Length: 210
Image 1 (cartoon, rainbow, N blue to C red):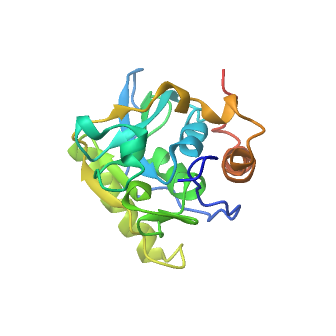
Image 2 (image 1 turned 45 degrees about the horizontal axis):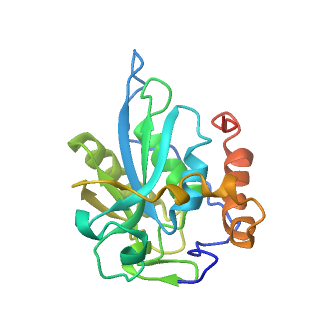
Image 3 (image 1 turned 90 degrees about the horizontal axis):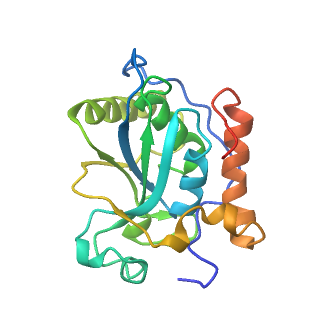
């Protein structure tokens, strides 16, 4: 692990994705739903979802391993079972789970890279959806099948779809990292392009972070 932080896929290429064929309609009333995803370092993914309309809060953390190994130092070893993940609290009356997945697959990371993102290697950088309900599992599996069948990516999607056992928030210094360290070259190369792609490709869904 380099001192500048974990490296994500720095490619600015965005694959145009269809809407999920299987998705829930927007809820009639405001509410709260939780989604947990992983796809490389959590800094960029958190920055993207903090700027997505309907998202109440996005938190960097760890999922997939035990509570006593949910620390950055231990997770960086690649031997804890954890992935660097982001917990997304969203209002289902403003955005659907399927739309969250569309952003996740198109601008937040590359779902065809197995146990890595860009130059980083290790299971802690794997692509995963940690579903919190059978409904999320159904929508996730259907969307992956839809995208693979349509061959929208050059390679098959390798994203794991597994039940969420627990989410452990990361250390405070990881939260909102992009905004706290705007001149960090890792941020400039890897994270700002993700946010700009969200702004460019999903303007109606983009909101400035408060």
